[in-house]
Image (cartoon, rainbow, N blue to C red):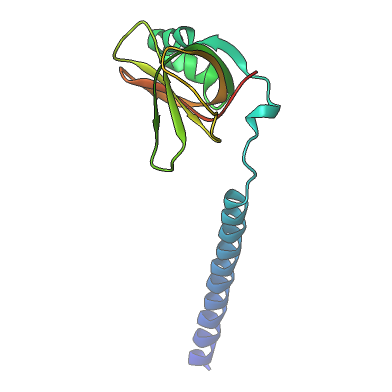
Length: 147
């Protein structure tokens, strides 16, 4: 009788552990599904914080923490002069805006092809600020040409 009681006790714990494992797996699956199926932001529908390329760079250079709170993951409407144009690994157009520091650029990636752009041209770009790489650049993604 003593062995049977131990067996029932272990059987109960195994069921509890299996129930917890199944609950964790279901919860993890729901979270993963929501993350991967989250709709992308449409920056064209958002009002962007209007700045020049120099103002954005100065904000990050002066106080990165305050600039992160103010601009990180926000829509930015950036006006400035194009320093150069390239394509990234995904084939998206990347425009670097000039700043007063020749070693630092504002790096802006378009989500769709903006058409004909040239270095030296002044444009207004709207995108999502994703961060600052000290002494290198401020990064803005998911951008479009603002009218």
